[in-house]
Length: 236
Ligand SMILES: NC(=O)c1ccc[n+]([C@@H]2O[C@H](COP(=O)([O-])OP(=O)(O)OC[C@H]3O[C@@H](n4cnc5c(N)ncnc54)[C@H](OP(=O)(O)O)[C@@H]3O)[C@@H](O)[C@H]2O)c1
View (cartoon, rainbow, N blue to C red):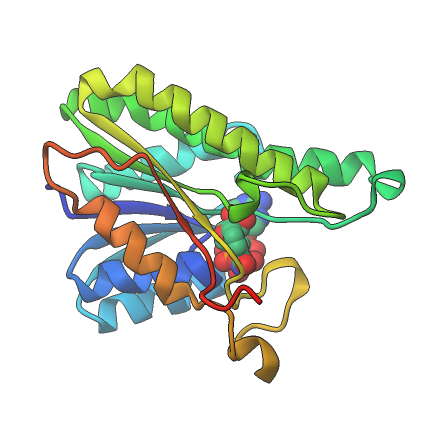
């Protein structure tokens, strides 16, 4: 197993939690997002935990930037073992209020950027005779929610890509897994990071998702985890 990972959306929330977990386990990571100062902080946290970190600040929705992020990670780490497609965003509007821009920005980041990252890294994985891709979807990639039709459909689309890539890539020992969390305390959609005291009673934390991603990234050679959905325990 190559203990190197490229993690998108690593400047906050779940991506930051995933970066921490890899750091604690002594991995080398490349962290990607737009906010350079946040990435610098997370990189320091990874190194303090015992890992090694590189940062690449970029907007993944712009053409060419996913390719540049992948190339940067290869240049810095030599071999990339795991790609975690985690960067994502959501806008929540009733259907009459859906703006074309919010439709486009959600599909551009949650679907197109993931596709562009995978398209870019697959030749590298083939050359290395293997690799692991983890796509961070959502529990709403399995169901629909009021006001979240576009966000939900981006996560269904990502699950569709996940299923197809699995069929295309397994002969090259490239594994692809969809991880679909429920509510996690992050700054997603303008939420207060860390959550309100009420939310803290029942919601998950980034470490819960990081734990699952790390299990996928370290699975044995003959297994190929297809998807993992994580629900909160209290569903009342
Ligand atoms: N929190 C939840 O309840 C929940 C549940 C299920 C799934 N998810 C999924 O988990 C993933 C992470 O979300 P989160 O909850 O951790 O929220 P978050 O804290 O808002 O994280 C989103 C990450 O994506 C990055 N990002 C956003 N736009 C970007 C762009 N154009 N280019 C590059 N990076 C960009 C952000 O960094 P910059 O702003 O610095 O670019 C940030 O690091 C998303 O895919 C989300 O859909 C979240």
